[in-house]
Amino acid sequence: MTSGRWYGDLILLRYIDTMVGKSLKEIEQSNNILKRAYLMADQAIQRRIMQDTYQRELKQRNMKVLTDEQKEFLVYHKIL
Image 1 (cartoon, rainbow, N blue to C red):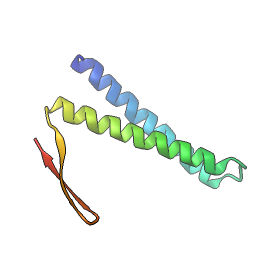
Image 2 (cartoon, helix red, strand yellow):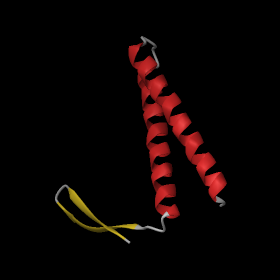
Image 3 (cartoon, rainbow, N blue to C red):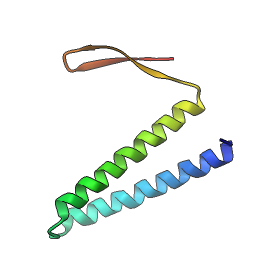
């Protein structure tokens, strides 16, 4: 993947994230019968965008995140 395409994808992902964020705010104020379903869908889209952006950033920097250990509710990671 060329760096130009990567930056274009990153810009597009941020734009989509902004649009979804605005949609979330509008839906929270609405009385639509499908409000809960729309909120869940928008939140899932935002999570996916952030995950994709995070993974691309790590790949660009040749970094890997590995789960190291878990103690109760704490998860430790190694960054290579």
